[in-house]
Length: 119
Image (cartoon, rainbow, N blue to C red):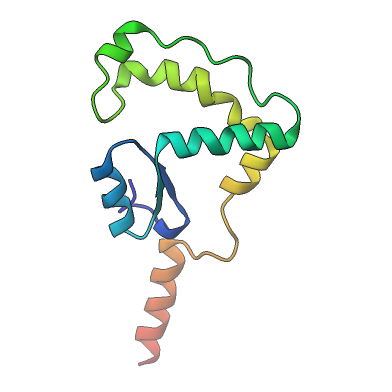
């Protein structure tokens, strides 16, 4: 996913898997552990002085027992229930919005074609 992204430096990867974080760092993406992410979310929640979410639902025992180093597809419902509300939070929408200063791959290719034609 990082390799396919047009601006990997703008990404932050959250994982407890050291190898995943190292791979992200090699591609110039920022990486943090899930504990660091949770701490940041809690600081954000305190700063906003209002609950950011409803109480986090208990994770199904099967998901915990079978959870490998990467999230399994049957974990999706759990993670959506935990983080799904974030896309409606104005601060998160703003942080994840495409930056008008970053060029897309298509724009870079168009510019490269123009440069090649001028040469």
